[in-house]
Length: 394
Ligand SMILES: [Fe+2]
Picture 1 (spheres, rainbow, N blue to C red):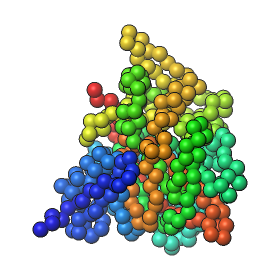
Picture 2 (cartoon, rainbow, N blue to C red):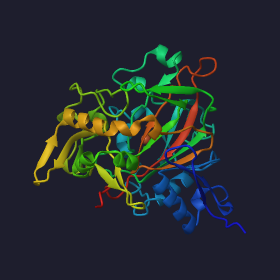
Picture 3 (tube, rainbow, N blue to C red):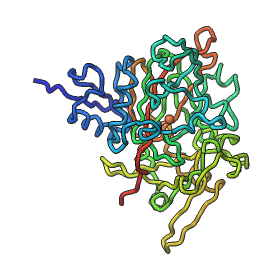
Picture 4 (cartoon, rainbow, N blue to C red):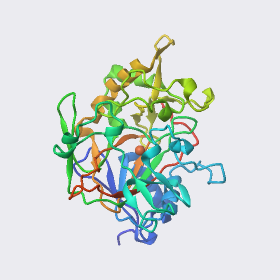
């Protein structure tokens, strides 16, 4: 007899990723997996890096939270003012943050964020904010230095990688282990858009609003021996309140880093910050399950690079040089053949190993509906700041 347990199937024709079939006993709610099945799921997420559970449109925010938190059991249970913080903490809502427009919280489960595009009435499925909400899908047009023209977007059906990133506040809080992203209301994946890589002319065709992932392990493996040595010996210092620091600056056309033209806010013009809370993270994070090295750097939020030389001395690169260096190291990893572009189906629950992939929003939704109206989309996202920073294990 077939055993009633989690079934993991690698995705076909993609560089990584898997789909998950839940056992019948959990009644389509992954929060009810027994310990043995949860371990299968956890190993699948850490090994395949992205795991898709279909048919989850009804998943309750509480279940999504329980499931997400289970990947990082050291996180204490949420109490008033302590434990189980959303990965960005309160910074997410800061007026000056580049993340401010990106969503609102589920009223009774503040670690779950509501993201998407369009207006949703208080009683619509997935709107658990308690009132009417208006969501804005992040468009590269507000974040890139030289965005596509309206014609390239409307007639040419082009889009961009909005921002390649790891989900993390990168100040005070530690990067979450796993992020879960649930597509509750998703337009049918019938419209295609194209990303044109401006430096080498290559192209990636994807469905509108696809979420893109690349593997940090592949990014590491594809480096030259010399570059591997560099990343293994380098610590990335992130700016204090990095999303506020970069808010006046704009990104490169591939969404990998920022254009350096001195527009960042000065450090004494930021909300209060403490040196002890500034994040200094290794460039390489070792996967606790596969033991592989993942090249994990947030190219938009970095501030400095500190590299330990063979003689033990430290070389530091400042903002501009650090961005240039990181861009050079990161760019090959986002070549079209390396990208898993997840085309959303309503009800998809995507779990990804946030400490092992880089991901990016894509897609233009404004005026892209059949009669030129804005497409509507609603998603629930959850990640929880970890208790420890990631490390390189030799
Ligand atoms: Fe994200």
